[in-house]
Image (cartoon, rainbow, N blue to C red; front, side, top):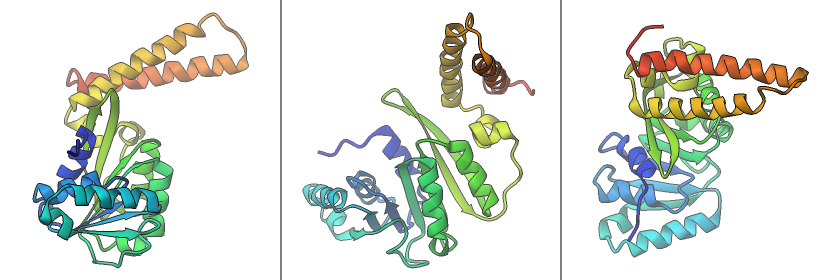
Length: 239
């Protein structure tokens, strides 16, 4: 039996019901299978650059013993959007990769991405840079979610084509919608990160040197920024 993680379930549940989906970098195919099983999508094209993960996804699909799943997932070896035609799907999912790679996949597959109804991404790093990239390239962030799964924090972003409003640097870093809705997982993340940075600051408090002083200043600035966002998220105050 397939055990889908909370993160995978969140990603799948952000898909607009009834949309045909491309699962870019499908890995073991769990999200693709879940989308069909839960009647979220009528068809999924599961794609991966490597034969190994795609073979595993095919095996998991067969072992689901679900005719609907077996008949409605198609598999393709593909470098990003390479083997996908414009308007072939409504939604694309890109998750479980670094932010830089996600941006490259979107840029390289722009011809297909521009025809999507929605794009769902979950970067594992460089999230602020990804948000900047989306805005700089004419994409609009319509929703953002956070989840804590197995002790780690994950962000999921839904994107459509179109110009977005300007963000502040803090909103690029932490997510405008997450701040505006006073997201409690964001609050938990901020409190965790604050404790982490305070430990780092304490460990170098009595050390000297040009690099150390620069690091101390950076930590002070980062902690002030976190406190500012916590004022909004935790206490509802405007800062």
